[in-house]
Amino acid sequence: MIHLRIRVPPSEFLEAWRQQSKRLLLLVPRAVKLRDRLAVEIEIEDRSVHALVVGTVVGVHVAGATRRVELAPDLESLGALRLLASAARGDPMRFQERPGRYLVNLPLAVASQNGEQYMSALNLSEGGCSLRWSGQAPTVGQRLQLRLGTARGKIELKGVVCWWSRLGSVTTAGVCFVDGRVRALLGDLLSELAGSQASIRG
Image (cartoon, rainbow, N blue to C red; front, side):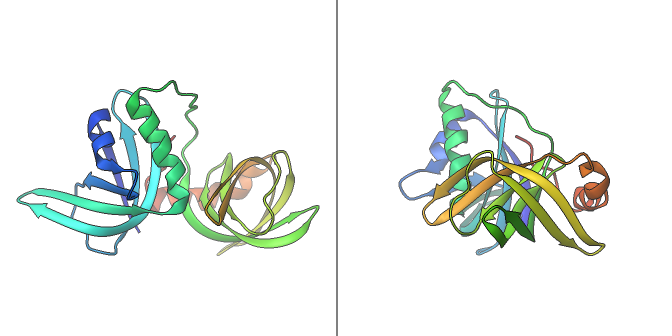
């Protein structure tokens, strides 16, 4: 996975996002290849909005020192693209800056009143995580017990579902940690992530 940060003027972003074909054209600061996986933190200039877009490079165009890629975003990133497009159009935004979080693909067990299921965390922070949800969609406010397996052993945390969304057949849920031990339990893991990738703001 290649991690990039890009600032885009509003008008350029609206031209770059091809909503019908679900493709995003971006000027990138480094060389990439077809089929590379990108995690791009995009900031809309003068809008104080940041969002992460993850996808696969399906086209590369090089002219001198200019590199432009065509990105096919993952289904989970379409919501972020709608947010960015809304900000670029100047629509009123209800957007709250969140603490830095880190892109992961972390398997974990999720226990609730419906039993235990295995899922994947898509990002992680001291405040919570996003899950690729398995099974029936959760309810907002649903309480969860999370068990993460790491190189240092198992970490168990309490959380609550704060939002969920469905794009196609993929359900994603946001979980807020409600465990006073979070900083102590996740400190080492978050430090490792901080040293290996850029944080995802917004």
